[in-house]
Length: 65
Image (cartoon, rainbow, N blue to C red; front, top):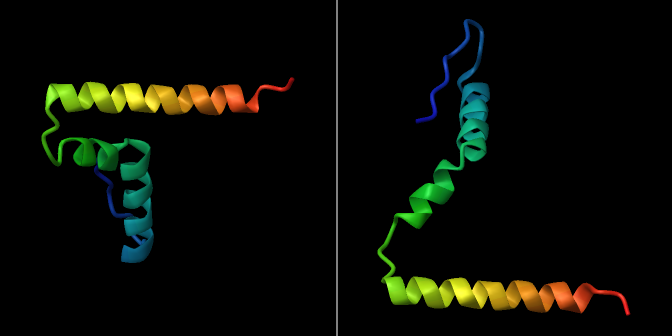
């Protein structure tokens, strides 16, 4: 849980900026998106293998000859 303390002479805008930065650093948004909907195990495995294939294609495309 991201939490910030508002300083004495701190504006709400700067506190909001600090809060957004902290949320981004703690990867809270990524976790929320990951848990936003259910992915069946078979679909999850297909997605994982597709991402691996994409990574491998990209890796071998960049290798110098």
